[in-house]
Image (tube, rainbow, N blue to C red):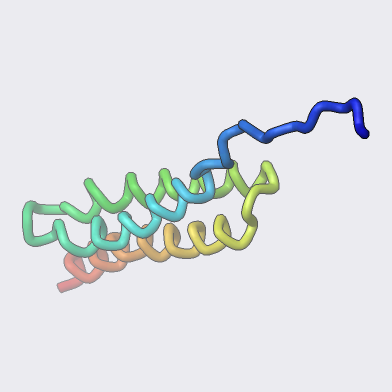
Length: 96
């Protein structure tokens, strides 16, 4: 017979963290960079660029902490792509 009490883990499971937030922001930055151009002038710059920059910053900070390197790498790649969309769109608009 054991005299040690049994332990029950009552700690909450690890929830969504910075890598998930970075990926969410990056995914939201894609339509934020593409769709608002019809709503108002430079809409992609106003909506998409801040979302993309926030995604990149959150992903780099989470990656530096060593959390979910694959997810943060994907978030950085999507964020950079979402950041390039308005830049290319603006250059094309100025050139035409």
